[in-house]
Length: 94
Image 1 (cartoon, rainbow, N blue to C red):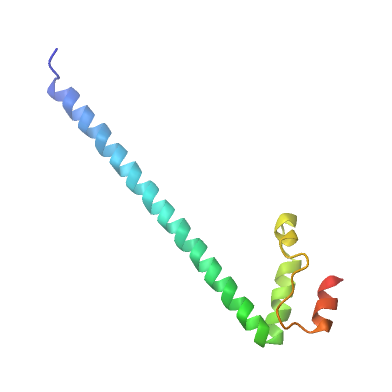
Image 2: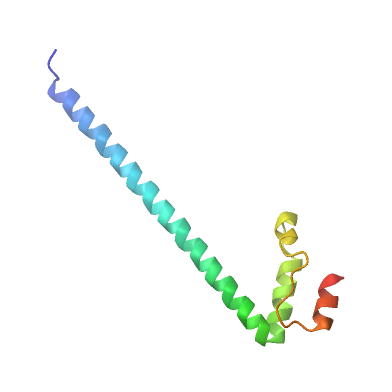
């Protein structure tokens, strides 16, 4: 049974649609990776700044204490800024 022109066109359409979806998926993955990279860079920059600036350290402490998800807050249990003063550590404990 020979393939009709309509069947060939439908097959090409399905292949093109699959290629388009694959490209969309690749772009979405690229955007997620870029977003994650930006967050890591900004987080590192904030941590570096907080080591040198008490206002930034206080803001970082406040951000951590106000994280809405308990599992996110748990990631910071026992963590303190390198070089944090004992007063800052006591304030963040309680």
